[in-house]
Length: 295
Image 1 (tube, rainbow, N blue to C red):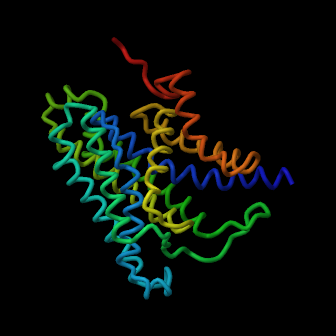
Image 2 (image 1 turned 180 degrees about the vertical axis):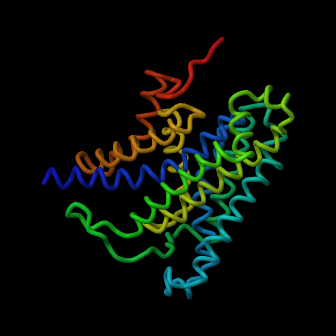
C-alpha cells in the first residue's frame, strides 16, 4: 500500500512540478530583470482558461479536444494574455516602476480587477474546458493522459525557454539586464523594452501552464491567487531571479505538496507553499540558489 502511495507522490509531484516550473520561471524572470513582484501573475493563468472557455463556446465543448475550434481558442487565449501582459507594463507598471511598493499595489489591483471581471461575466459557478480523455498505466497506476501531456508539454516549453534565454539575442539581452541593468544600458540595451518583453514572456508562460493544467480541474475566478502563492513560494525557495532555482524549487514543492496530501491529508497540502515561504525567509532568505547581497 505504501509503495503505491509513494509512486502516486512521485508521479503527480512530477506533473505538478513541471507546471509550477512554467509559472515560477516567468515570475522569477520578471523579478530578476525589473525587481518586480507581479501580483497579477496568477490572474494571467486563470484568464487563459476563461478565454478558452469563452471562445470555445458550450455547444462546441461537447466536441472536446477533437474540435478545431478548441485549438484556435488556445492560440487566441495565449495571444490575448501575452498582449495584456505588455499593455499592463506600458499602462500600469512603467509609470510607477521606480517605486517597488507602488508596483506591488498596482499589479495586485490588476489581479483583483481581472478576478472581478471574470466573476461578473461568467459567475461564481465553476466551469471546465475539455481535456484529453483516457488513461495510461504507469508503475501499476492509471494516470489521466491530460496529466501526462501537461508534464511533457511543460518540459518542452521549459527547455525552449532556457535555450531562448541563452541562445537568442533578445534572450541574451534579458539575461544581461537581469545581471546588471546599468551595464546593459551602457551597452545600448533598451531596458524598458526588455522588461516589457519579459513581462509578456511571463504572461505567455502562465498561459501555457493554464492551457496544459486547467483541463485537469475546474475553472474558478479566485484560482489565480493560489497560483501566485505557489509561484512566490517557489522563487523564495529557489532564489529570486534564479531560473535553475525556480525549476528545482518547483519540483520540491510538487513532491512536498503531494506527499502531505497523500500521507497527511489534502486539506493540509494547501499550507505547504505558505510554510515553505516562512521557513525559507527565516533560514535562508536568499533561497537555495540566490546570491548573497553585498552592501
